[in-house]
Each structure stands twice: as structure tokens, then as C-alpha cells.
Amino acid sequence: MITGASSGLGLELAKQFAQDNYDIALSGSSDRIFEAADTIRDLGVEAYPHKADAATFDGVESFWSFFTELKRPLDAAVLNVGIGLGGAFTDTDLEDELRLVSINISGTVHMTKRVVQHMVPNGRGRILIVSSISATQPTPYETVYGPSKAFGYMFAESLREELRQTGVTVTALLPGATDTNFHSNAGMDSSEIGSSKKNDKVLVAKQGYEALMNDEDHVVGGDEETKQQAEDNRTTPEPVKAANHAKRARLQN
Ligand SMILES: NC(=O)c1ccc[n+]([C@@H]2O[C@H](COP(=O)([O-])OP(=O)(O)OC[C@H]3O[C@@H](n4cnc5c(N)ncnc54)[C@H](OP(=O)(O)O)[C@@H]3O)[C@@H](O)[C@H]2O)c1
Image (cartoon, rainbow, N blue to C red; front, side, top):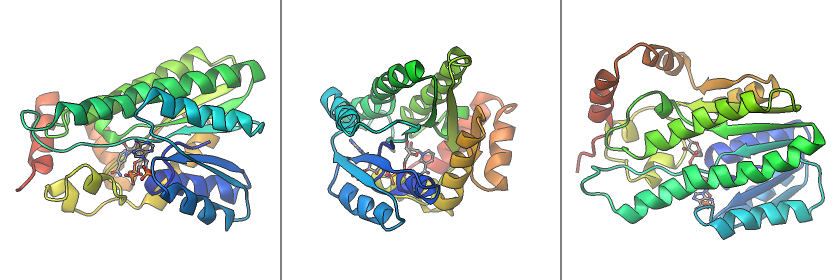
């Protein structure tokens, strides 16, 4: 199962699974999820699309019910759905920020709970949590987004240790900026990050898929420069990283 698979990294991750002959249940909030399912079926596997809003408790629960009613085994779960939000914290709408927290944090905890309580009694399963390189630095002008992804990263690493003896593995994917609709949807087109060259989503999805299959605790998704940035972030002081990010994320209009 993959959440947020209408487009972007979720859809590319679905293609990785399809190439290895997995059937896939996939969710999104728009009708594009049905087109995504057609794309996956064209790769020769079965696709089960479900439309629901991952920002609400009922929306998350409805995808889980949809999945369990399929009566199919759950080999892997990809907790991918996530949104961004650019802009100065003094200006952004509280509602938008709380929606981001609902999708990126509450929704991830909710779906992971269902997945873990299903997988552990079976003694097997793989979980991929899509975090971000933003988890390794402060993210001014996306001030709530980065910390929501830091949650996902440490949540994955915590759960991984708890589940070590259960046969269920947990991996975090930390992509650098990637060529999806993400920055545009976050209202960041006019920022330096929004308009600069990004990582190839096919490469990032492949790296995430391989890390999941190889039972790695986490992987940084992207080119060598992105991996070097994540490495540098381990030793660069937070205020320095914050100042660099502010320059790149500040909206120009
Ligand atoms: N792109 C990057 O630069 C980047 C970098 C690091 C991490 N990430 C992470 O990668 C993940 C995927 O993002 P992406 O880059 O692929 O962005 P994207 O192209 O905007 O895709 C987001 C996906 O989530 C779905 N979605 C959005 N809101 C939803 C909601 N309320 N309920 C259900 N589904 C919803 C969308 O489907 P619908 O359109 O059908 O709603 C779409 O399939 C996110 O967790 C993001 O934080 C992205």
C-alpha cells in the first residue's frame, strides 16, 4: 500500500513496486488517483485506487478499511503522503499549518498504527516513511514543514528499534528537493528553492525502494550533492543552516 500516490514520489514508488510484480493499493485526495492506477495496471500488476482526504481521521481510516476489505497480504506499506507550505510564519494561515500537521504527523501516526498492528502478528512486513532532508536542518519560511519531517525521520528510527525482533522493518527516505508538484503546491514557485534544479523523482524513488528492500534504517534521496548536503548538515550549527535555508526559501513576491 502507498499513500499519496496520484503523482510525484508516491506514483514513482508505486512503479518501483510494480516492476517487481507487487499489486498495489494506492490513495490520493483527487480523481488523479484513478489515472495513477491505470498507469500502474499498464505495468502488468493490479492496482486498487482509493480517494480520501489524508488530513482527516475518517479519511485515513477509510483507506485502511478499503485495504483490509481487499483481503490481500500486506508486504510493504509506504507512508508517503505529505504537503508543504511556504511563506513567513507571521503571514501564513493557521488552518493551512494545522492541515499540514494533520497530514504529515497525525495521519502518519494513524496509518502506521494500523499497519504495525497488522504486520507484527504476521511476523513480517516492510514500512517506508517518506521524510525529507528538511528533517536534518531548520527550515525558515517553511517553518512548520521541516519539523513535521523531522518527526517522520525520528518516528521511523524509533519504531525500527522497537520492532527489531518482530520481522517488521522500518526505513526512512529523506529526499532532497525533487522534481514533483510539491513546491508549486506549497506556494513556493517564487523562492530560490522553487525555481532551482531538482533531483530526478525516478532516482529518488529507486533509492527509497532499494533502501526499503535492503532493510536500511534511512537513505538520503538524490544526487551526490544532495547526499553531501545531508552529510554536512550533521556538523553544521543550526543557526548557520537556518540562515542558508532562509535565503533559499524566502518568497520573492
Ligand atoms: N518533492 C520534494 O522536493 C520533496 C522533498 C522531500 C520530501 N518530500 C516528501 O515526499 C512526499 C511526496 O511528495 P511529492 O514531492 O511527491 O509531492 P506531490 O507531487 O505534491 O504529491 C503529493 C501526493 O499526496 C497526495 N495528497 C496531497 N494531499 C492529500 C490529502 N489531503 N489526502 C490524500 N492525498 C493527498 C497527492 O494526491 P492528490 O493530488 O490526489 O491529492 C499526491 O499524490 C511528501 O511526504 C513530501 O513531504 C518531497
